[in-house]
Image (tube, rainbow, N blue to C red):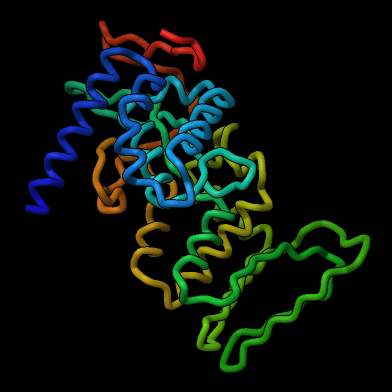
Amino acid sequence: MANAKTGIAKVDAKNEVAQATQQTGLKVLLQKMQGQIAKALPSVLTPERYTRMVMTALSTNPQLQSCTPESFLGAVMQAAQLGVEPNTPLGQAYLIPYKNKRKIGDKWYDVLECSFQLGYKGLLDLAYRSGEVSIVDAQAVHENDEFSYEYGLEPKLKFKPALKDRGPVIAYYAMFRTRQGGYNFAVMSKEDIVAFKDQYSQAAGSKYSPWNTNFDAMAKKTVLKQVLKYAPLKSDFVKAVAADETIKTDIQPDMADLNSETINVTPMEEVKEELPDGMQEPEIVPFGDED
């Protein structure tokens, strides 16, 4: 019976997306999907407040309005299910437009889609929510700070920030302590962070990426993800982290069960849109205009 209900819910969600697509505009989509979004949200976030956040994101980044409705809803639902606020000053999560490769007929084309990305504060919040850790932290290390560390059988970490004239950032570290007293830490130089960003981050090349608007927070997130790999966290946390920087165009009661549909992401401002003959650019519906 549970599987039947899940199937019905997925069909209903797809029908809603299809109807909204026909009527054009993500505003219509949000209105039609209010019920699905409300079911996904934790009690700390009301549907009205969450919808206002998404509306603000659309107004702040108009390119989101040109994303495919399916991918936009997929990113919105991922943030909703994780209980993180998208595109707010808290820096918990981000909805970012990308050009993704899609096969239409026998050819591949660049299609503007919405990617979900966790922020540093979102990762911290999810780690604390797991209930397994008592302390989670990440810090930037400046040139004039007192900082030393050792790995091995007797690992040590010492950090004492300079009170003034700290100098440029040279490294980042992250640590956790479990409720049972266990702990671990990781250290990455700033050069390591930049190399990691260039190699692994789909967001790095976009002007809308938090890498370009808040490098410090993204650097802390990067080293924090490295050390949390060794924390005794529950599978729900692992699945949540796996959702980072993904594009999903389907809806499920648990979005983490869906595979990412990112094929080849390119920063949208660097790619010229090419669509098949007869296929037009999606219409941008200004948010706030009433039908």
